[in-house]
Length: 189
Image 1 (cartoon, rainbow, N blue to C red):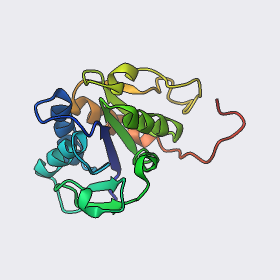
Image 2: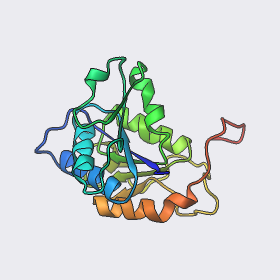
Image 3: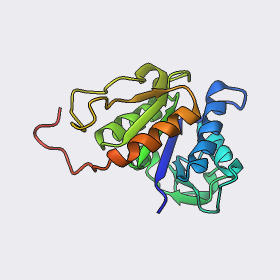
Image 4: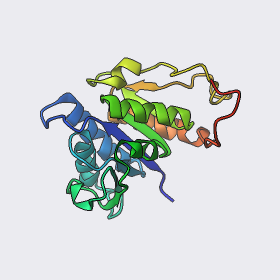
């Protein structure tokens, strides 16, 4: 079964932006490395990642999943294969963040919530140091003091500069990021 990698980022970026190019390359690399792509299914970074995924020679129908904020499946960009209209608006960000790994490309407040949720849900989370937005501000930091994986002392919000670097880290670490959030406990900080 293919693991699902989420790509998160600004809906408002244009095709000539750095974030759009990074997202396109990331979507393509996700499929090239044998994973499925999950995103919010809308425009900007999400559309770019879906376009890139569709451009992969390894793409097959069903590889691109869009978790839409509205109840309207017609809001998905044209590259989404599986449209899941959640009706949850921004609250669907926690679902996006529950993928096996999350890659942030820049991003505003919505992406910040996906980064924070992925961290709290014990997911492998990466972000671009060279993108405009939250991923660059948080790259290579620990989001809080919790010891999510004692056997991975380097655990952090991994900063990357290319799609290949991001997917190589996912290939390396994903088997080790195998725990799932089981609820808030008194020891959580």
